[in-house]
Amino acid sequence: MKSYNLLFALTVSLLLMSSCKTTKQISYFQDLQTVQDTASVQMLSPEIRLRPEDKISIIVSTKDPELTALFNLPYTTRVIGQVSSASGSSHGTSAYIIKGDGTIDFPVLGSIPAAGKTREELSSYIKNELITSNLVNDPIVTVEFVNLQFSVMGEVTRPGTYNIERDRVTILDAISKAGDMTIYGRRDNVLVLRPDTAGQFLVHHVDMRSLQNVQSSPVYYLHQNDYVYVEPNKKRANESTVNGNTVRSASFWMSIVSLLASLATTFTVILKH
Image (cartoon, rainbow, N blue to C red; front, side, top):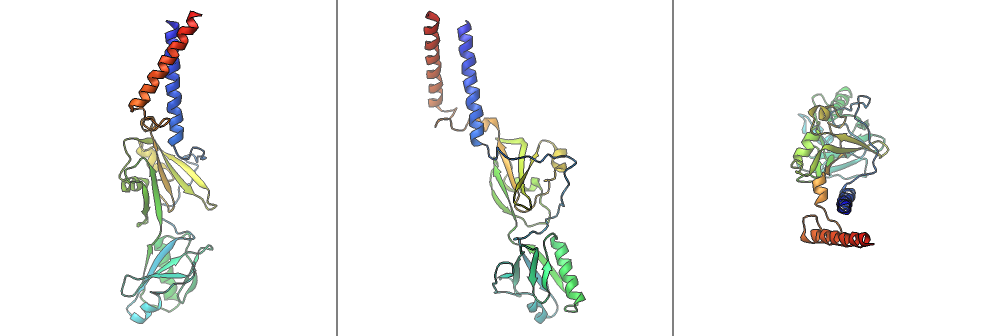
């Protein structure tokens, strides 16, 4: 009887070891350092703030067509950090890539700061500069995002990269855009990877089962270049391949039966001696 108990315990141990190994084989980012979601972590601005290398479009509209043309540069391409263009309106759409020093070169006004500002703040700044410089009396300045994105990975219906079109995007918006988590996604451990100014990722864990945990997280509002990763649960891990077979396949269970038979034979020989 003891031999059978030992055989059973050994078999269970082998299966558990296989399951743990499988989980490690399919989970991403296992060596990341975590930033604890505590009150000591400063809550960042919910609005998207511009950064170097972000591309934005700026449209200035006035009652005077000549002035409008002066501040909008269609069909013009310059070096990165200056101005590139994208047509699509009667007066053109000017697209700017924010330089490393956080500025853009704007027609007539010259170099103006853009990094760290929201769309509304940059729009107000340009409008005020145009008025105080006696260039335009009644400008309408519209700032739009061009290449700002976030990515959703892992156990979601539609993983991929999505454009940021609004000033505020939440982790709930991101998961919804990706078609929600699959039944295999871990609701208790959704990761958000956020690059800092040095390009290093800060990692936050979000428990989607708790609304309080979600809303109090410093990554509740996503920023450009964030990565949302939904980790697979144990059921998904157990359904992944193990030496080319899955736990649901006949070949896998035939291997288990063969292993048990071999172990039984080994124990029988040992007991006879």
